[in-house]
Length: 132
Length: 299
Ligand SMILES: Nc1nc2c(ncn2[C@@H]2O[C@H](COP(=O)(O)OP(=O)(O)O)[C@@H](O)[C@H]2O)c(=O)[nH]1
Ligand SMILES: [Mg+2]
Image (cartoon, rainbow over all chains, first blue to last red; front, top):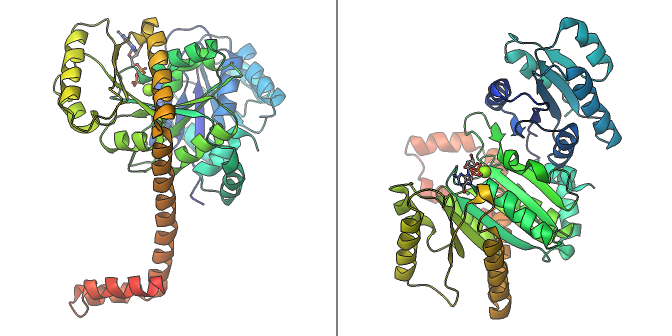
C-alpha cells in the first residue's frame, strides 16, 4: 500500500461572484501535498455533496463570503449525513462573525477559519484530524 | 463496495482493491472507452461536459475520469476539471472522478486503469478519459482508450509542430476546438495535410471536426464520429486487436511492478550497501552484479 493522499474538496457555494480566497487556499493545500478538487463558483449544497461523494474526499472545505454561512454550511453537513458520508471532515472559511462560530460548530462544522488566518493553520488542522 | 471508495483504495494500492478488481474483471469490457487529450486550456473539460450531455440525451450512462498532473515536488494537485462539469453533478447516470497523475510517468497511473475497470464493471456505457496531452501521456491514452480524440485550438503557434511530432499517429478523431477564434480553418488544413503525409494510416481516415465547446457547437457531429469509429472498430476486428494490446501492456506493467518490488527487497537483503561501495571502488564490476542478480532471480 502507498501512503494515502489527503483529498480535499474546496467548495464555493453561495452567490458571491469571486473565488480569490478559494483559489489561494486550493494552492496552499496543493503545496501541502493534498489533492484538491475544486468545483468552481456558485455550487449548490446538493452539487457539493454529490461531488464530495464521487470524489471520495476526506475533507470538504467550504469557502463563503456571501453571509449565508448559517444556512449553507449546516445544510452541507446534513446532506452529507443523509447520504451516508457523515464521516467527512467539514471545515469552513470566510468572513464569518465570531458570534456565529459556536452555532456552526454545533451544527457539525469541525472548525471555522476567519480572514487573516495563515494557511498553515487549516493545513495542520486537516493533517491532525483526517482519519487515515 | 461503493465505486467511489473502491477507486480510492485502488489509488492507495490497498490490497482490498486488488481482491475487488479480480472479482470485477469478468464484468468488464462492455463500456466503450474514449480518450480526450490535448494541451492545457484547449477546452477538453468543456468538451467532455458537452459530450456527456449529448450521450445522456441518447440514454447512455457515462463515467468520466479526469486526470490532471500532480506536483512532482509535493505530490499535491489541483484537480479543476469539475468546474466545467458542475451541471452533471446531480445526474445519477453520470459518475465523475478527478485523479492526479501521482508520479506516474505516462500520465495515466495504474490507478486510472483500475478506475476504468471499476466504472466499466459498474455498467457505464461510455467512459470518457480526459488527460493533458504533454509528451508521453498521449501515448498512454492510446494504449488505454478505444477511440482517442485529440483536441487542438487555433493560435497555438509552434505547438502544432509538437502535435505533429507526438500525436498525429494516435488520433482517431481530431477536434479543432475554439473554432470561434481566428485561424481554425488554417489549423484544419494543416492537420489534414499532416494526416495525408502519415504513411501508416489504416482503413480509418481520422476526421477533423471544428467545435465551439463553450457554445455546444459541433458536439452532435463529434458524438456521431465517435460512434462511427466505434462501429469501425467492431466491424474491422480492430477493437479486439486494440484491447488485446492494452491488456498485454497492463499485465506486463503489473508484472514489472511486482517483480521490481521483489528485486528491491532482495537487494536490500543482499548486503546491497556494501556491494555498491565495492562497485564504486572498482573492486566489483556492475555488469557482473547485474548478471548475478538476474540469474538468481530467474531461478
Ligand atoms: N472561445 C472559446 N473558449 C472555450 C471553448 N471551449 C472552452 N473554452 C474555454 O477555455 C477555457 C479552458 O477550458 P477547459 O475545458 O477547462 O480546458 P482544458 O484545460 O483543456 O480542460 C475555459 O475558460 C473555457 O470556457 C470554445 O470553444 N471557445
Ligand atoms: Mg480540463
